[in-house]
Amino acid sequence: MGVDPQRSQDAPRGFAETLRQFSRAQKSNHNVSAYARWVNRPAGRYAAVAAYRLGLRPNQVTVLSGLLSALGIVGIAVLRPTPVTGVLLGLCLVVAYVLDSADGQLARFTGGGSMLGEWLDHVIDAFKVSTLHLAVLVCMYRHFALGHTGWLLVPLAWSALSAILFFSLMLTDQFRRSHPRPAPAQGAEEAPFARQLVRSLVVLPIDYGFLCLVLALIGLHRTFLAAYTGLLVLFAGFVGAALLKWYRELTEADLRVRRERQGETA
Image (cartoon, rainbow, N blue to C red; front, side, top):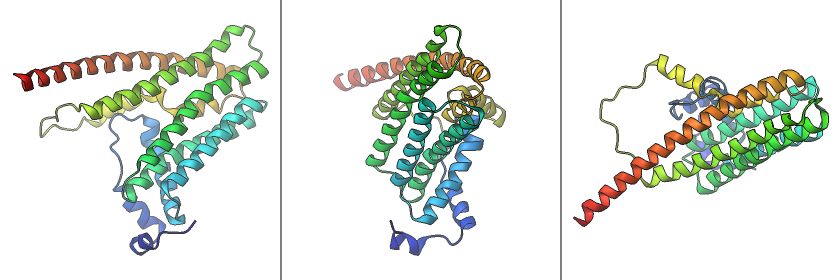
């Protein structure tokens, strides 16, 4: 695994200089959660710079993120949850999420991503969505004194809602690319910081990194169950609101397409 000679010639010298250059190639923070904006993306930037200095490619960082995610998820299913193992497994998932941000930042800095990179990223995301809460279900069944088996419906509900949100978001994004909205009027001002802050807090319940912090409490069974269930309620409310928003958005897109077709045939 070597450094690309051409890239080495153009590479900035020193970690600090590389970090400054990475900071200029960032995605917009519009509508991202507070955790992503102030924790995961900044940490991902440092990880991306470290990967760049080591000569790693974006897909290699993606694979490393996937391996750490798999380690954390398998650990939740097979290890006895104690305060120590909970923190270690939560840290494993948090670091994997940081690397999930780092691969995209590294790809943008080095000239953009690839179809393979995007495919690989989505495959790993699908793996996490389909297995994480099932691992929690196994852990709760094996080690928690639940009192009532109805509590096992909590991770099942998490698993179902996570899958619904993930795949509906992917499909909605594809429709948006195929039928983009009209461009906003020129001169439109960016939302004030206070409004951005409110939005970042509103979407916090759907942030995967925030969920990882809750999962770090899995060794404190009652505390974890209360936090995990409470977060599920907020997550379910957001999923319902998002599906309604996307339903309306795609209905409007269908109307635009019909009008365009009618205009072409007139």
